[in-house]
Image 1 (spheres, rainbow, N blue to C red):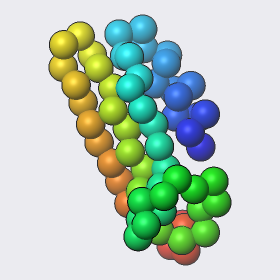
Image 2: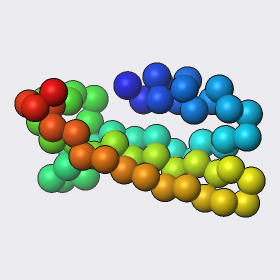
Image 3: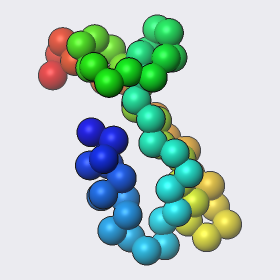
Image 4: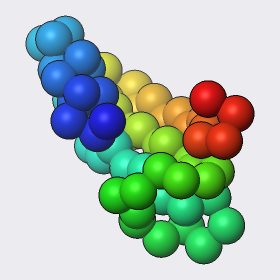
Length: 62
């Protein structure tokens, strides 16, 4: 998922990726297994603006 997010964001040459991560929503530990609720977080720069976003994803509801 992280690789796909990186690929999509990299299509725009003006976007400089600072980080893309997926962590366990309860522990905030990095996880490779999406078996319950996780937090997907992204930070990018477009020019001088720094954009940060995150979303909770519940694997059981997907």
